[in-house]
Image (tube, rainbow over all chains, first blue to last red; front, side):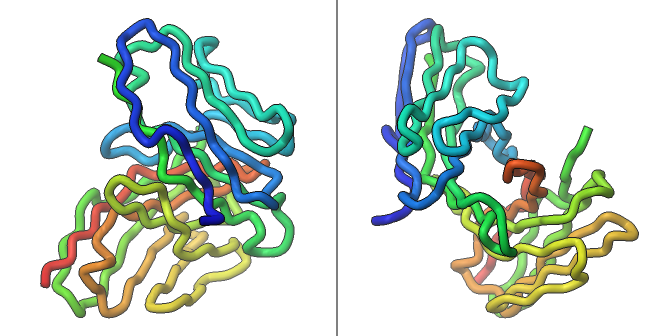
Amino acid sequence: DTGVSQDPRHKITKRGQNVTFRCDPISEHNRLYWYRQTLGQGPEFLTYFQNEAQLEKSRLLSDRFSAERPKGSFSTLEIQRTEQGDSAMYLCASSRSPGRTGDAEAFFGQGTRLTVV
Amino acid sequence: GESVGLHLPTLSVQEGDNSIINCAYSNSASDYFIWYKQESGKGPQFIIDIRSNMDKRQGQRVTVLLNKTVKHLSLQIAATQPGDSAVYFCAEIFQGGKLIFGQGTELSVKP
């Protein structure tokens, strides 16, 4: 499977614990995005990387959230001191840098569903 | 701020009928839009895109129409099939490839 891969698919954690999610993008894609999606809503942008550089962070990304992409390949999203409001689907997407029409298409992974109890 | 929204949260159609899903956007400077399909438990899947220099774009069984005057997008699905049942989102691409999604329309296809 050469699509975007996310791990784990599901995570249940107790409030206050730290969690880390991993995303493996499509190998030739230099852009990687993280989104959060709650039930009945569209995905909300959190942050994105071009290669290993984190170029933009949403105001939704509080200081409890940190994302890394150390070698410009896979990425991790860590949430410290989880709260019940963090319960959501965390989606990762990757794309090539926009160029010709269609090159900017972002491919999404299956997501990691986080439940904070 | 910028926002992309949808007119109807749910749409139910009979198998074989055509479906039309609508979307309004607020940023008149937007120049690139995408429709995504999301099935339960899965990530969004690209359907079709359109740039602001076009009014219409066709794919396989899908057509996207863009009306820049009223800042409105629509997705037309021809001969809707049960496999088309999903939530459909329009999204606007911003600098860096960041996507701003609307709330979504749930399409239900009755056999």
